[in-house]
Length: 130
Image (cartoon, rainbow, N blue to C red; front, side, top):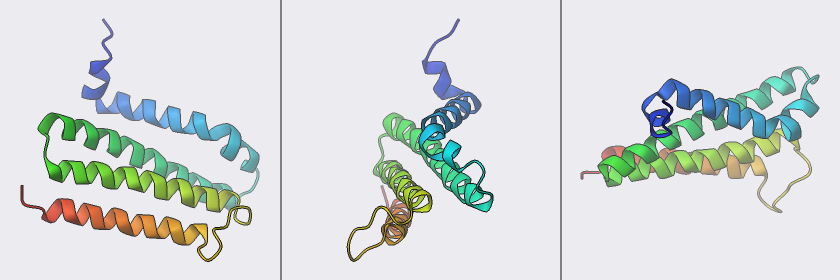
């Protein structure tokens, strides 16, 4: 019998659902219009893969944080959620490089800044004494 809570226990099933969901959401606006763009499509798939892994690890970190209730895991969950935002911004910059601009900062700089914040949050989580 199917029980939704069993999805979390089987990480391969959860990963398959996350991959399918992320690709389905990004297929129409991002993947399909760039299907014949060669290496540009490879660059886009690199960021789609990053989003997929970040969503999967964020879900796992969130579940672990909920079960164990430690601040270290909370920092890890926030870090990986921040990495989702960084990858989304970098994907938007890779897909439409000249459309979105934030005056002094380019989107790639914002994405890299968020990636650096992710590393900082992960370092805080690793070196924190609970």
